[in-house]
Amino acid sequence: MNEINLSKYLAAIYRQTKKSWNHQNSFDFLRATQTDIIMFALKNPHQIQKDIARRMAIDPSLLTKDLKFLEKEGIITRSLSNESRAYHVDLTDKGKKIAEQLGNEMEEWWISFFHAHPEINQAQFTEQLKLVYEAFNANE
Image (tube, rainbow, N blue to C red; front, side, top):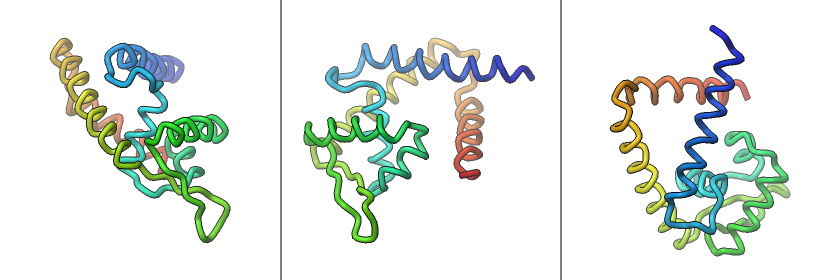
């Protein structure tokens, strides 16, 4: 296997999906990374910023910038942990509603994508990417 091509494909898939997604989502004031953070917070409530940055592979300073924006917009809350100087991140009610709509829109986007590309086995593609993701997170 040519690892260079694999990296190229993974990077291109991410960029192309986010580029296309940015043109179609209902929340045009949110950038792709911010929608990713919202969806992550929905599935992983009360996580500390350090863990979010690690699990999402986002630079911690860039994550802080996005979290401050989302907090200002009333989408998340950040609360100081009792045990450390770390902040826990949670969605507000507004954030949960946005996450629900984003999730529905993302699901529709992917359904349309796989419908337009029947040569790609959705279940197999998804399972393989899940295994890669889990392998990365198991090593940290």
